Amino acid sequence: MEAASHTVTNQAPPLVGYDVYACDRALAEAVGRHLPAELLDTAREELSGLGRASGSEQVREWGELANAFPPRLRTHDRYGHRIDEVEFHPAWHRVLGKGVAAGLTDAWDRPGGHVRRAAAFLVATQTEAGHGCPLSTTHAAVPALRAEPDLAAVWEPLAASRVYERELRPAASKAGVLLGMGLTEKQGGSDLRAITTSARPLAAPGEYVLTGHKWFCSAPMSDAFLVLAQAPGGLTCFLVPRVLADGSRNAFALQRLKDKLGNRSNATAEVEFDGTTWARRVGEEGHGAATVRETVAATRLDRVLGSAALMRQAVAQAVHHASYRSASGGLLADKPLMRNVLADLAVESEAATVLGMRLAAAYDAGTERESALLRIAVPAAKYWVTKRCVPVVAEALECLGGNGYVEESGLPRLLREAPLNSVGEGAGNIQALDALRALRTEPAALDAYLREVGEARGADPRLDRAIRGLLTELADLEGVEARARRLAERMALVLQGALLVRWAPPEVADAFCAGRLGGEGGAGFGTLPHTLDPRAVVERARPVE
Image 1 (tube, rainbow, N blue to C red):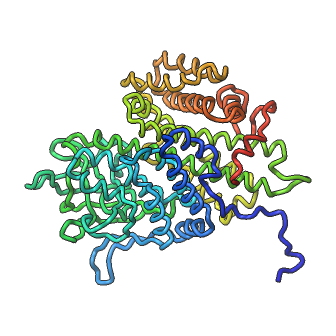
Image 2: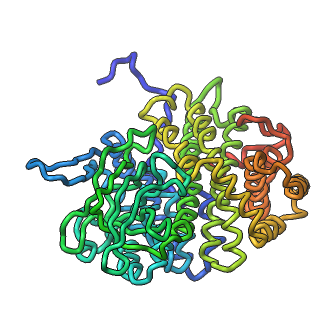
Image 3: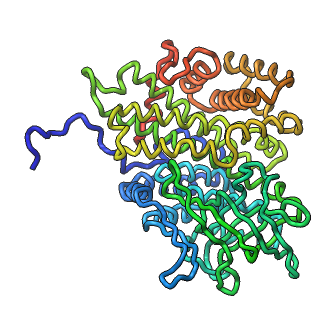
């Protein structure tokens, strides 16, 4: 029985028991726009099923538990045998199993697979972002595996499986596998030329043993890993299984797990190869960077989608709170200044979602033009969208006031997670320089980009001016490396503006063009021009049926 002095009033109820997919209007509209009509009913049913699960109290609790009890490294068993295993809380396995069952590793051969998977990734990672890592690396490994058809024939169906099996066993005895990656080393980071891990060929064709290390190994509990090493012919990609065909453990020593800012539920390890680590070559010797190029691009798109998911969940929490919390005689959501803040955040979230889903659709299209668009748009989007994630989540947290700063709100976990996607698969400078490289060396990529934004010309004068300004910048490439970040930012903003003008409601497109392209907004959120009416934008972002 509560004391009379402890009456609880004016608190927002928890945001649970809702369909994360169906209540995200921008996402649901993108699915309807990019999928063929004959796939829509099935896709919507699947996504709503995942959405209801992701919004349930039970799955939310699993996400909290997976982060409250992070993975532990077990290097040896009770008898002193080296086992090199990562131990997770049962909640982690439940969340990860749901992701696998929802098709988050199955995109490459499924009709509309990339759009369906991207939407599911956006939904599932709002519950728990850490499990997105093994789902992403497993999905992204497929293009690299296809450089070696006999390997792909074995591993690709297992990677695309809807069955999650946590035990480490030979792949041939499993119904589904996870794949991780070990590319970077302590002395080089993103500079793949600095890799020192060596690969010595064995007598059997395509078989090698590795000596060296990896400073960041993603998803170290996986069944196999894509690894880069220096073979006699140069930098080469290899597949390193954890368990060999005879059931014995491969030499794969987990030195320690990284103690990370966020992403606490997910393990990231340092690993050592002792000169007996067995590996199978993937692709030709000396072509390692080319072999993993499409794999890295796929994980970069997942970084865009992951940031969009974090933004969407943060904005949903902020709008939900403001819709229940009263101050100064009325609901926060009805106060003009708070409404401006919420609308500004909602516009940023929708722009990220629309861009990420458009790029996923380009994968499904598979045409030369769409592939060219991906080569320039993915690094630009990865640069900009992931960088917007931190300020969006921080501002959403502030909308909850002191309640948002408390762990129980879930916003601190989102904020700790927010910087990760900007760092992973190449930080900001790498992305900006990759977009610049596409500009300089691939005329088809620039042409595809200009055709895409050109679809919206004439619809909004602010967008038209931004396109002309970008063309002026592109015409002068003197000293361009120092301007690479600005170019990547402008390219992403112009592309987002063009997509919103074509597809978003007028109030959303108007707010974006005013605040991001027209110079009518300020540097912080909540500075949209007073001539706009943000009410409809906030209502659109409200997480209700």
